[in-house]
Amino acid sequence: MPEVAAKAPALQTDGGAPPALRLEGVTCTFPSPDGRGRTYTAVQGVTFTVAAGEFVSIVGPTGSGKSTILNVAAGLLTPSQGSALTFGAPVSGINPHAGYMFQADALMPWKSALENVAAGLEFRGVPKREAEERARPWLARVGLDRFGDRYPHQLSGGMRKRVALAQTLIVDPKIILMDEPFSALDIQTRQLMENELLDLWSADRKSVVFITHDLEEAISMSDRVLVLSAGPGARLIGEYKVDLDRPRDVAEIRMTPRFLDLHREIWGQLREEVLKGYAQTKLT
Amino acid sequence: MALARTKRLPSRPVILLLQLGVLVAFFLIWHVLTETKILSPFFFGTPMAVLARTWTDFMSGAVWYHLGITLLETALAFAIGTVAGIAFGFWFARAPLISVVFDPYIKAVNALPRVVLAPIFALWLGLGIWSKVALGVTLVFFIVFFNVYQGVKEVSPVVLANARMLGANSRHLFRHVYLPSALSWVFSSLHTAVGFAMVGAVVGEYLGSAAGLGYRIHQAEGVFDTVGVFSGMLVLTIFVVVIDAVVTVIEKRLLHWRPQEAHTTNAQG
Image (tube, rainbow over all chains, first blue to last red):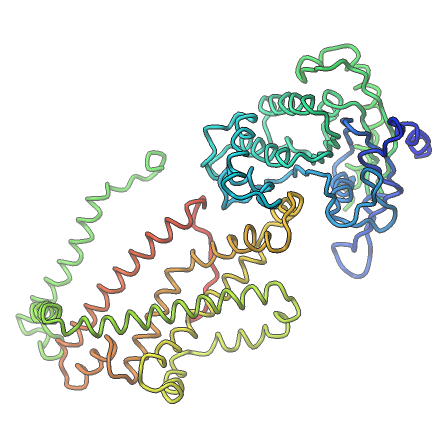
């Protein structure tokens, strides 16, 4: 933990501008699901900074509270201790700079793909017709221009993720929070989506916080990988800079020696945590 | 899809033909049994007489007025019950304290057989249409209420969080998330709700009124006119089938976004 805390201020300096996102000593304690007044601490003392335009991945074993961290950054969850800052301002209520791509399906099932993409604009006061006109090019960008009038249940899992991506990006958030967005997809679709995401991201560099349990995905996409320990009371225990050239192809980059080095290094640390997490799930 | 079905059913025209066959067989058996005097035509009527009576009633226009009254009562009961059910369903779902406090009373009132209320309503509201509407409302309200309550409660937290992240305020959430979700539950209970609205109207008419299909059946019974009773039942059946078909069309139109029929909670009738 001290190593991360020590490094954080150095990364924060981006020409003096406040970082896109900073979590400071965030601890989240929940009442235990079995009731009886016991509590469960998901994450403890989590501190990290994401610079503007930076792509940061957080990896950790299952149940380590990765989503909790994102929910704090999004403003959906108020931490028990610590605070979240976005562009220097404390997050209270929904973080207005953040877009969130959820792990589960989050599209409104009663709206067509086009209406779903247009929803964010509508919520911002854009008239429905105009919002849908502006949503069309976004559907085209994620390759779904012919599927605008389909409802979510008529789309495949990969298509729904594309709609969700367009839905998140259309409102132009400065920070994109992604919670294992592609974990439900098969490996081929997944790599396609990863490349598409990198393309869209490199077009106008936003800050991305990408949660995943897949280390290869994390390394191939990010500028920096943070490692979370096994829960409960998960902490950030490692930070690795990914110095691979961009633009990247997520499938090809996995063969490069530098990628394999990084993978070996990070996996050495993550492996222990995964085993610990596994042992805990066996106990309970 | 029909092709993927493991056990193939015959095509739609064949099914329709079979369904028609059942109807014809039923009338045929009825006809033969009454014609051979195995069943007394006085107590069981005869299909020919029933059909003839129904036909002349429709032609002379005698039945249209009563049909109109019943339809009006059904429509009013359905509309009022639905609006009240939606309003209270939302209120209860969004105010946990209210729902916890009133829970036993809601259940108690819903468990009450509504027929016993008919004389009370007749006393309060007279023998006109409003006592029947009131009876229908007590039936429709609970179906819609429970479904809206469920619909609001069952909104996926992820969909809700997503809408909030996209910038929805509480008004947007109501219009774009809670309402569509609740309405989908209401529409999926539409058949039951419309059916109960009509049960309320007809039962109310039967127990005391001056017009309507229930009144006609009651009148015929009063003079041992079995043909009149069966004719009234036939008109009622046709009426129900037509309304049900209309509801199916509306349902398909409104719930086209839905993958399949969802489960609904049923109020007790």
